[in-house]
Image (tube, one colour):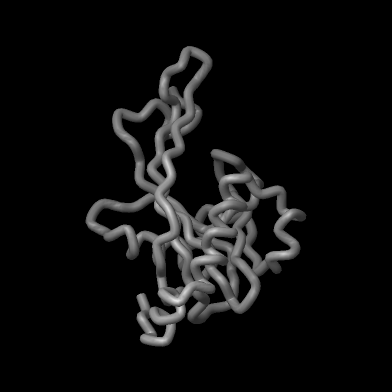
Length: 159
């Protein structure tokens, strides 16, 4: 039996990650399950059958942190393919990363998050984030300062 239910898949899994900002702070979650148990990351998880990728992003943030988001914007799509020692694909995820702003809610770690908190961009190094996660946060920060994100925010697009 696989040590992880998604190991050696017959197809890729689609996952979402959301870089949520509240002013200059970003929302981080501490993983409560494998893979990467007890490591810090952005909230996210797997898309479910019948839900749009945007709905999955909103649901995952709410389930993991009790936070509602607004102004969802696409940042990047990342392929995460990990091979075992025999070069077989052990894990295969297509990760869709978004940026969003805090809408409401006080943080309560839930679902598969062991902890969640607002972190200043200047303190991110203290959380030993994966380089890929740091790059997504930097891209999200640049995007949220762009005119297209500002226009979206002013139009009050809320999911």
